[in-house]
Length: 234
Image (tube, rainbow, N blue to C red; front, side, top):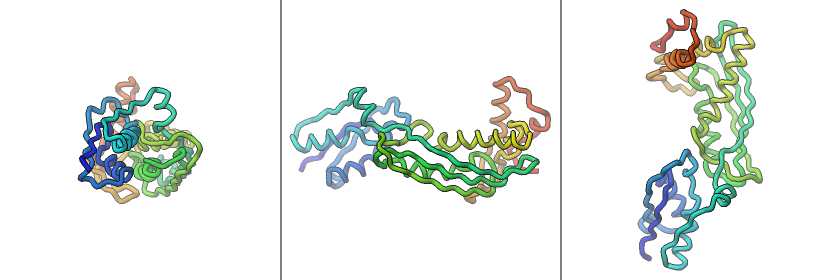
């Protein structure tokens, strides 16, 4: 057969090519996937939505095919940001040192799995956030429901894990009677720290970011926090 050529605006073209080859049952030498200007993607173009439909029709009728969804079709058939349920239990000392997190995440992936299981896996990497928590237990589950397919969308799996984690930090600070700024300064990554997954931290900068955030919010931090930096631990 001649070369099947598809013009698309996908965000991860090589991943899409692998999916399309399986749909068409064709070798890579027979499919030319051309990526145009992505425009606004934000994760919503990480999955194939129309490419395979147009490609199959082109193979069937041997003529050029254009497939464009209406807004209604987009809402009904394209991927969405999925829901998550969290259960977190943490250990914290009276001096504010967070010693452990036990986290259980259940992700509603919708009717099918595209990037859903990847999300559950990726969230384990960010389970400790940007804090030096030495002990982390993470259980992640992806479940199927009769809902639209859940996939990547803006800060995929990172924001989904960090929002409940930061909420937990606020609750831990309240539980021990500490200012929420201080508990973050105490536990922030320092240069050379080792994470629970044994990754060595390079170019830490959370403390400096917190200082700038306070400055922008016109919040005056106490001197002992302003004296801290990310260069190392005393």
